[in-house]
Length: 205
Length: 224
Ligand SMILES: [Zn+2]
Image (cartoon, rainbow over all chains, first blue to last red; front, side, top):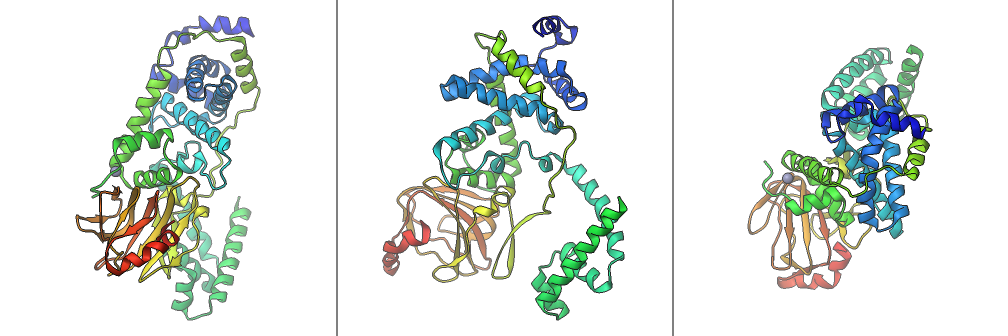
């Protein structure tokens, strides 16, 4: 393996450095699309020692510093598909992953009961936050159209409840008041409707 | 239009995670609501990333331990594709039949928010347990509600989530972020609008005027 890596060092691909933002983004894309070991090795060779120097300054402890490097680079390997070049550079993304891991390391040292996790504060690796605004709108639209079709298949009473709650955004209590039926009825209609919708969606796949 | 923002230093400390849990929540919630600070945060992240990751380091040769780590990481099957978690359309909290939208930072940590408690007048509070020594609280003031004049032994950070309130100096609206210290004496109140705020205190309030001073022995019950 050593020999292979030595050869890669002279690979023409490596002529550009990871401090070139475009190059680093390209490497991440290769890791994401084809799990390229070569691309990841190059990222690792560049970023791991730098992360190590940073983490050593932060923790003053070699083992903890190595753990931070390993966790950060593992996320880069596993979650490269979540990198979005429009939101920032590869280096910034990797930095924010390391920041989150540092935060959780420090938090765990303090044994505090109600502490916040880094993911709560900065959902860097949250798949949902990866969706860009445009995609969200598109997905929503497609999903909404499909859901509208399914809703047509519900019994009218259930359909009205679903509309009021999920489209008009009213609370169950408000719907109960508006339809002049007990809250329990609205709850059971909602439950039945959601169950039915779920069946429709699953059988459709 | 948001008039009051956290300082640059707050934003830098937010980006690195070096604030108390309560202040991380406060600044994070403001950033959620404020496009100007969102851009600052992106700039600070980029700047710090460049400083940390492009700094010249004395020893840059990959050691054999590093290569072991590299092999160990790549031995794991990468997770291709994404499995989006069911995302809520928006985060909300309700009080007395009213519903309020929460900024994502608060929405993601909703399990830390305790039950609403009614205080004097039309003032409600719900504690947010996030650890650390500061006390983080959601406060709801109905229309025409006044918090008696008070000062702070320590520091009070306030963020308006929804609505308007005033004190002697200004009015504060959605997204406004204020940091007050013990040099400021003020009487927050609402007029024709209600107001939902979140506040972080590092010491109990000190009520300063008239009968409200009687509240001081209890203010720690209300606010801490
Ligand atoms: Zn701002």
